[in-house]
Length: 460
Image (cartoon, rainbow, N blue to C red; front, side, top):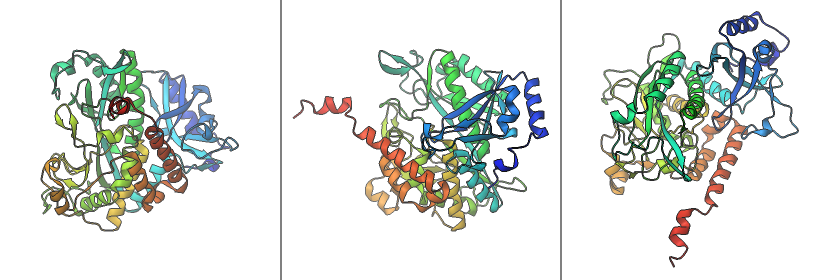
């Protein structure tokens, strides 16, 4: 595994560490966050004064793993340490005196197998053995909301159009927040391409440049943290909850994926003479086939909450269709499938992902599934061109189209039954993830909702 272990660095104060400390000091940085990401995808850290930077990089900051979900520790266990990567340390543009230093969790000098970044690195190493780099772009959708008399409402009370997709006024009214965020994102070098008002009220999306999957997972983790704090400065909250409103469109975080040659950087998904007409290569189709074969299992990671499955439905939004996938299928430039091949570039877009996903684990699951399709030389069949939402059950059966999991429990059962997930996550994290998410399902299922009271209390 391409992760530096602690045995080689514990007793050393490498010149590179001191040089990096001095560089950060020159930037005006006073504190550094020795950071990792928990199983939920939430950033965690200890904050270190800059004068203690070199010991921090050597693993001085210890974390009690039993205090968090999914790290597999007991209160009696020794602590975990975090080893930040020097070339991934970034200055927080909205708090310029602080730097964020993401790294790998270690235990007794070795990478901890239940660390999210370790899991993704394992998948990256597998791709590298095949001469491939996994590139990833994420369409970052979100709602801006306020709490009002106990209810969640759109942040902008004037944003009331029934069909508000691409609405200019609704977008411009939020420009102070948008401009601040885009300034920060570009300062970080993310190259924002565009942003727009999405289908629902106070719902928006940023699109920015793709990069390798580890860098994109770091970006998504930092982006969520940054969005939350900046939104609160403007007097509202940002939510990545997939379905905060029952009658409005849900929020996704579509993965746009491609594989590049590790030596040349050439996009290995590109094939202008594709006989199937989608403009992608045999390698891309094998990757797609791997995703479809393992779709139920990887959905447990890509859509990891009870609420996620209230987004993955056919109808129920104000504008009719939900724009969310429910079928294990693929097509060309067709948004009614789990997997879409856009017109603009040779890549594969998965629409069955939302922003509650731990991006490291989600990217690892997708990459491992795609590589399994390549190594097994799977074929997904021809793309389906139809509007999948309007096909009846017989038509779906004739096309051998199956559905994605309908609930978190169904997805977790598929995750637990798929041998690839143990290879991808390791036995310890797989077991912990199944237990954690199964309990989450039953906590939800055992709660009696207001809907049930309204429906059944005096009905019979």
